[in-house]
Length: 112
Image (tube, rainbow, N blue to C red; front, top):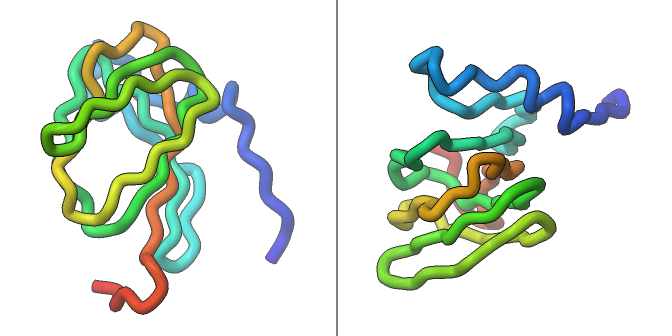
């Protein structure tokens, strides 16, 4: 496989604008069941539980990640794990919040 790099600036530029009615998510890379996306909810995070495990890596801004009843403040530089199927969302988003999200299957998981 050829080397690939993803510029945060370029991927941010590919996000739908808040006024477009589009989802503030873009996915620049997929390989098998591994996906890399950039997520920048604005102004409210309405996501639903996912079928894969995921890591969020906050690249700018701040928010509070709510998982079930737990609340975890996060800011640029933080990495957060969310298990498949877990209800979660970001709240108290700063206007510039953006996070890489990596979706993957845990070892032994059956793709589906």
